[in-house]
Length: 303
Image (spheres, rainbow, N blue to C red):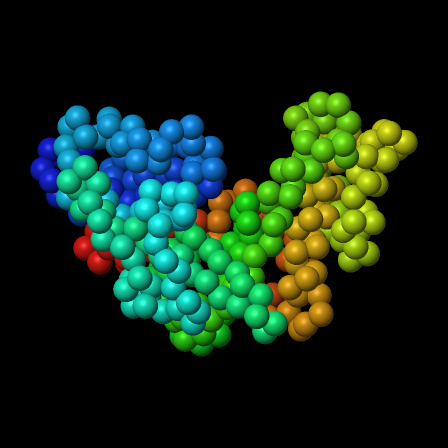
């Protein structure tokens, strides 16, 4: 792809804990994309990492502005930006964003969103709120009434929307816990990296989740040793077990909502869609990249 020499382009970026994604937009169309390391994996200051990621573009042209969301605004990110408290609407979220400069290029960094549950326990997110606001732009029906959105990932988010505002959120450690458990003693030597996924094992893990997480974890190892279960079975069962525990916590005690919106990477949303099949809710699935770009454009206003 080529980038025009005129300074009319906009760089949009979603900078998470595990990776950086940058998009060059011209007249609202993505012309190029670059990736880089996440904030949690940096071995140099964030500014140097961003500068290196932008460098191949900057030899040809300079963007009119840069708009970033996610961990770019975290305490250990590029520049700390405060949280927008729930209930958080689009205008309030925009107001908390910070307008700075990066190497003389105007830079806007999105705010995160923070909330508390009924007991006063705090919860936060950075980046997912951009996808949520983007989803409302792409699917206007989400901007009115009551809706529930699930954003699977390293830290899975459940977001409640009420008339276009983020009314509440709850975070699950599902993705990161799964990754940690794959490197634990539950897996026999080399099992974390071998074998194809097994759908039946995923379904078995989902079913077992209702009897508790901790009491079922060690069965992953025991089944490999005593029942000759494959590495693929172990990984799939474990995935079903942790996802099933998350869904049980959110849906097991209540009547399932009529509809749920899943936002994320196709591989992850497919897993959650399979897991949600027994709950009978109508599912709307939206691509996480499309939602992130749409949300960043909503924040920028001109991209």
